Length: 212
Image 1 (cartoon, one colour):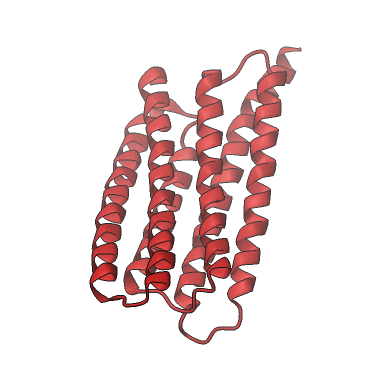
Image 2 (cartoon, one colour; image 1 turned 60 degrees about the vertical axis):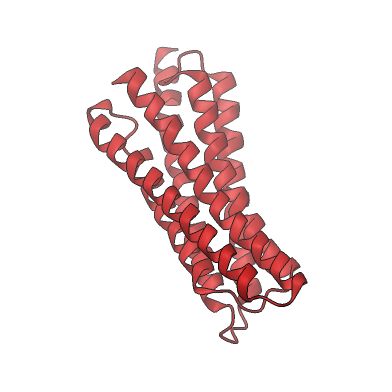
């Protein structure tokens, strides 16, 4: 019996790592999508479809984690922390999917350098989430996890500044009101991805503080 519980405990960290991998893959596709806009690329839909497939895999890992939470008597972390962590990670992928779908839905043909920069920051956040999640199973990594969480927080602040600058420039230079609304929505979606990554970091900080 106890052997089964121990196996399931380890499975939580495996699922966190699998989901974090998908966040990075989603970030790469998001960057590729933004960079392709305005360059006459014909594979825009391919990038959006790839993100959709990635998000579905993330959903699968989220469901498996929640199901495992209900089946496991002894969990390696507080149950609420496990639920918050996987849910917030899933929110990151959901928003990446929303951003990609919005590009298609709004028929966006080109984006600014700021939008591409925001996508890059999203990827950087995802890479750091992956790095921190990989260390969660060992609280000897507490200091390193906290440093990465601080990096994610700084990246979120950078994204907020980039978004404000982009929207300010948009209102000064864009003459087409409809295009302004579309691009503003894309900027806000991209920045919100970094907000959710920061939420993941906050959960990990709480886990470290309670368990280190």
